[in-house]
Image (tube, rainbow, N blue to C red):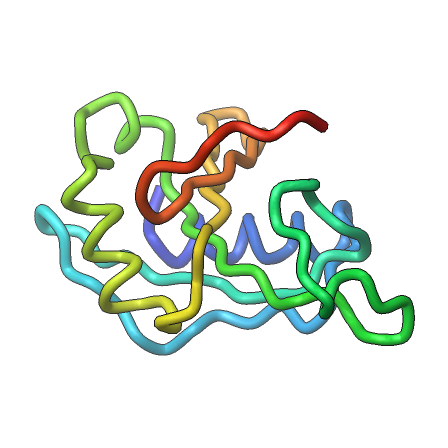
Length: 128
């Protein structure tokens, strides 16, 4: 599956199935092992986890913060394409400096998508 197909699939899933808003494809890309990585950015309809408690998220009138999403194909995940170095480069070159986490969107061959949080650095686990 081509990179543009993967990005479009994840964007449509976020917009029409997960009900995200303000989903956009970022223009910056990162060349990694012969492939081009691009991020999506969007606003989820609800709080995604209990790990980040800030005043911004506790306010009912303010919108949810924007999240960054890294779409990859399952075959890339299995072939050691996604390494710690790759994730470090993604945080450094594609995300804003204040970004603490990204959502990893892994697309299977049948079109299903699973989402995982990937954090910058080591994080203490939190209870849900």
